[in-house]
Length: 278
Image 1 (cartoon, rainbow, N blue to C red):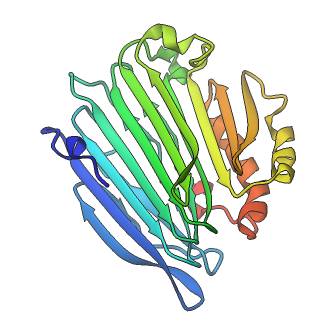
Image 2 (image 1 turned 60 degrees about the vertical axis):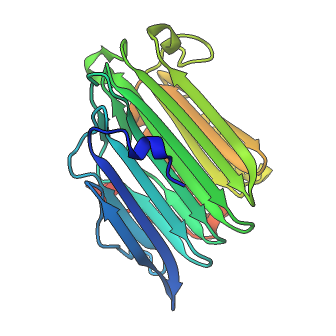
């Protein structure tokens, strides 16, 4: 359900993209699409035959205070969709209003992979990013989020602004993971409960997962230079977290892990989206 406050914020782009994926014959198709404002989806690709690969677009190229973006993805039984973005999403300095991006995913015993490029938060941005994932009994999900607070490549720090991150993952209505982090002052960038002085944070979730999946991922989280990573198993959800100073490093780590765990979680070999090669 869309929160009324986000729709009626009053200024900025009020954008919404609703996509439905269904199994038709021997492949998954984009069976429904509704869009409002500057959100769109490219024509699907089928590099692995049955699975539908689609790219979510935000043509303005950046998000400013007052913008509210809503993504709704539904995957029906036996369908399998992989979605990514062609480039980073940039959240610019706000003149006072908060920008919001809400992601609502519902997988009814199908499979959804949400593998976007990174989010970049410029100093002075005010953003609330919420992800809600509802899975039915046999649903499969792999997803990640990569966030850069400031631009470390030019030594730019997120010394002003605020960022609220909330993730809720449910199976059959029962919560498996509830995650919340608020960065609203410079000290939060350095506390043990915050970012520990690292500007890039990232989280990968995969379910259903087992102890074998956990042990398979551990080696990837060791020996990371200029950063750290860890992996846990919680209520059948594999949770991989990264803290560092490079979105490229986070992307490489998560892509390597995805290639290894995809057969374990979905039963399919890893076939990267074509856009990752550009």
